[in-house]
Image (cartoon, rainbow, N blue to C red; front, top):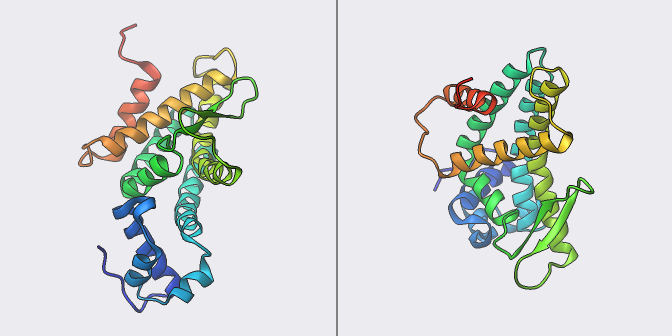
Length: 226
């Protein structure tokens, strides 16, 4: 449990408390009462900023994600080669996920995961989402809208990786794909693989730039000798 300076503004204390509680308890077990107690503020103060737990969690991860995406956007728009952009993107991604690993696991597993028995997959025909119900009842529209909102947070960073790969293809420095879906699937698996490696791995002592260079090299050139 973190110690929060009571001299900090109330909203900042609430955000710090929320980050700590959600990271320790997950979304379902976290309570507003515990966040309020840790932030040392009144219940009315919290509800004046956030109408419920979901709104508080979304605000927390959205604020962090906005800063993350801005860094990635700067990488994607830099006047450098697609090779350098890919490596820089991966370095920023590793740094961010390492700093926010438990909180982003909550986002991935509880908010957009399949533990509820249903999830969305990429629809090749429409280029959008397709709802898949594996077990249990289908979700109500409120649940669907909630998951889509968190999915969009993740996609805001994912799309920039896809753009970098597509730029490499368009400039003829990356191998061409049959269509945009080929780039999409490559980006999706790279993004997901790096995320899971951070969540489940124990390589935190290695420098992010060093790991990013290895991933970019192997993703682009593989292991086979030519």
